[in-house]
Length: 94
Image 1 (cartoon, helix red, strand yellow):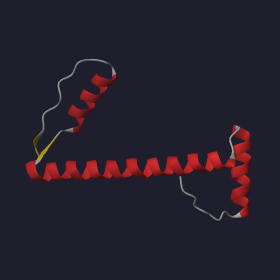
Image 2: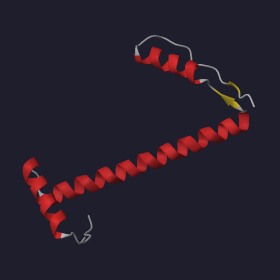
Image 3: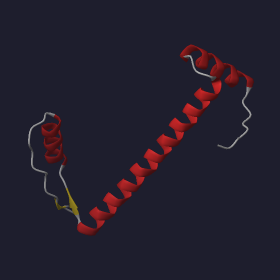
């Protein structure tokens, strides 16, 4: 484990201390948890963006998409626990 120093404005430091006390955690623990949550969020955001880029590249390469009504029906069936075949992509009109 390494040490990093951060400078906190007094009002933020007081807010963190109050939040830590309310949750029964140490200030250090609360700060680590907050930093970890933010890092997780940014990693998920990057993964989402990469996945969107890959899907857009696939659409550009194949010209195929799934119509929203077909996808919605599929997702609603799946959410309801009903078996549902995956909708097939079709060439975009244009």
